[in-house]
Image (cartoon, rainbow, N blue to C red; front, side):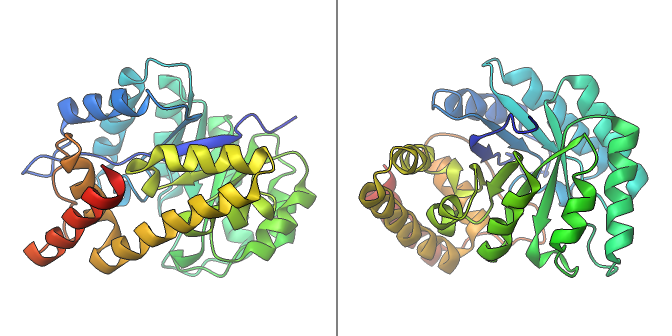
Length: 291
């Protein structure tokens, strides 16, 4: 059985100070807060964590701090993806040494690699690190989507155990069930319910940071067969996400979490700071739907 990773995983945000350094104190406080919820784990150092705007040594520092602060017995999946295979292997070995349960890596972007080159990228990582791997199938990453045949080849390797499917292609998600009993994570929060209905066994999400209980309740309602409740919660989530998109998703999430009492700071550049007008919109959202 490959799948040991069902459930709700928060794609953890990274708090930064004014110099764009990791704010360790705020991170510890925030991790402790999220551990109070009935989540199954954290996804560390992904898109939401702004990891691809960090240097490798910064990413390793984040890995170390989150592992140190996560005292509850939950799963920890860490993103080590990089344009450089050597870099991804190095971070993967470090994460394994720290005691992370699994590593993950985005499909290499920008260069337009072939399917065979992408397959080799993943195999090089897992054959070197020898640790559970969740493939981060991120459709806007710049490559052609991985085919079902590519995934079948990858899942022949014992270490490749799951997919984080951040794509609107739910037909592809449904096809992944042919891979067997593997972890299938829905990645786009606005289609969480649809993803579950098409075969996802859990979710890894960015907006889980600002409303974790809504996703826990949605997941529970779905598994209990209460589709009316699940659909109602998904509608609430989509309404909130619509406002986040209007204002800028990641900066908005950081602002809203900071309003809840955690000093998340701003996103790393080139993200812009929120305007006063957008903050007013988010203040209204927070008061009416999140506080």
